[in-house]
Image 1 (tube, rainbow over the protein chains, first blue to last red):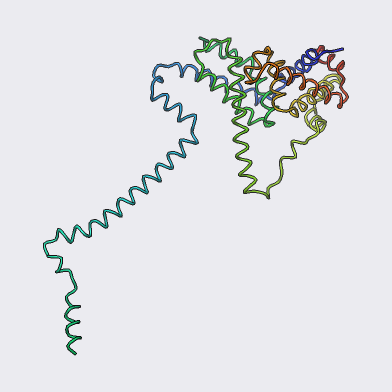
Image 2 (image 1 turned 60 degrees about the vertical axis):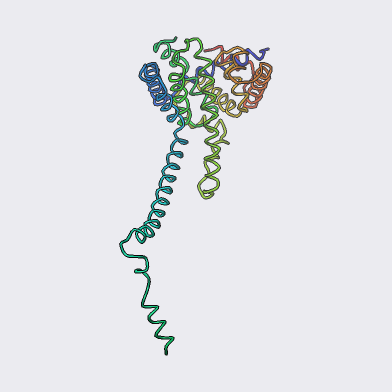
Length: 123
Length: 196
């Protein structure tokens, strides 16, 4: 009678056999992944990658989705702030033009209205 | 500190098992390849200074975490897919395939009877493994296939040694029940395993 361990070993030996029958495409992709991983190992040991910048770049690489969302949000924020500032400047410029002009502010008032008002009241 | 050659040797040794193990969990060859590749890269990038004897444990932990990340992403994706598309054809039926159906489609090679029988047994075992609860499968694979001891398995799974024993025991029992349902007794299984 087989105990738990023997049963597990029999199952595992059949599973091992199944790994030897993997498709050629799969084994070649696994081999590619292995080669890439080994080359990355050398790359991560390289001194040029050490330091704060490298850590930041690694963080950005491993959090691509968050980084993209943050960049998009920042772009929207900058666009919003710039638009607001431009509008405020446009409004402020109107008053500044009147105050800084050589003509007195009265010059810009509608005098024809007063003339019309006087004439109408005399009738 | 492990050398590049040691890392390469280690990955060569485990890559096929890691792939199979991931396929049992995610049931998709392409996703499994991506997960294994991701785990390999993480091991190489994050732990280049660790000794080679720590690689099996580290790799298993990375692999399990990468699988969990995959499931989380799938969960979110499925939520959006369900919300926005209720008209597409359902591919979920694949999950409920009969192991024997797979056998008839895959084993078309003209092989001797014994090889066909073994292939059938392997396919039934693989399907049974896929059907196991995730934690039981994880414990079984780490403990028996990766040949880790109970303490290492517990550390890799992030649970107690008692839980590992329980998961392993239940996993083996469930596998035996499924195999017996498919007409494969423990003794026949033993013979198939020994014949290799």
